[in-house]
Amino acid sequence: MAKPERVGLIGVGLMGHGIGKNILSKGFALNVLANRNRGPVDDLVGKGAKELKSPRDIAANSDLVLTVVGNSTQLEDIVFREDGLLAGVHKGMVLADCTTAMPDSTLKIAKAIQAKGGRFVDTPMTRTPKEAEAGKLGLMTGGDPATLAEIRPVLDCFSDLIVHCGDVGAGHKVKLVNNMLSLGYGMVTAEALLAAKKGGIDLKALRDVVSGGGANSIMFQRLAAYAIENDNTQLRFAIANAAKDVRYFVHMCESLGAATPVAQAVHQAYAMANNSGLGEQYVPTMVDVLGKWNEKAK
Figure 1 (tube, rainbow, N blue to C red):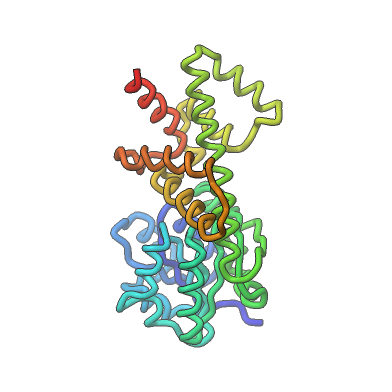
Figure 2 (tube, rainbow, N blue to C red):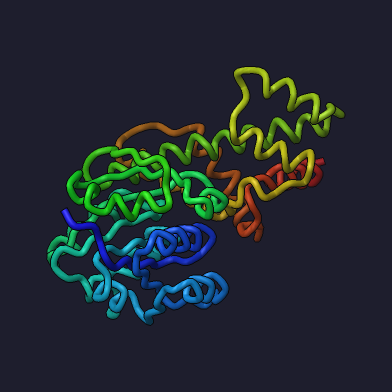
């Protein structure tokens, strides 16, 4: 089984830059899509990547295409527009989507790619840009096991945990559940830290207590680092993306007939912050957002 020789990457941002850097470092030929955010693109081009002008060009010149974009709407545009990926699909090409996406959109895209002779797998990610740069992302995969095995040498360039979750779309379903858990923990932690601040509690003492008990979590530690040391580097994940991800989870559950009272509340908190113009801020700043809301409520 031959590994892909040419890899295409669409979405060279906080996560995509690290992915591309690690693919290049392992000797693969890399094509990247032109982007208005020139810094990451120029850096990868300087490391040997080739910049192409359209998704169609990326598909036509790649054996494997990785998409790392913000949402399903953006991905569908990249696939279906006139100069989109679908126009460049060739027999055997693989599209591996790393986006946090809606499973029904995933199935729609997969069907279209397969109709053109290509193959589709979903490979959404967990962890942060720090792990992307270090080549230590976690991947949840959905699709044909043989196809995933074929592209595994590329996936191994930027991940150290790969879990096969089932058929096409299964990876994206697991990703939405995973993000609901982590972002739900995030909102609970933000509320708890705000209450501690308003109550005059020593936050370092609180962190010591939580760190030694069952309430501890990676998300708690990341938000506590922001509340105590003003360290906002441990979770570079935008509030706008948090609102989107939990919304996708709620929509998925609606299609399954599953009630989501907690997820609805979590989504509303992130959505309100996003709608207030704070969407580009990182999730740990929800401690400050909640504080401002409480001040206005007096």
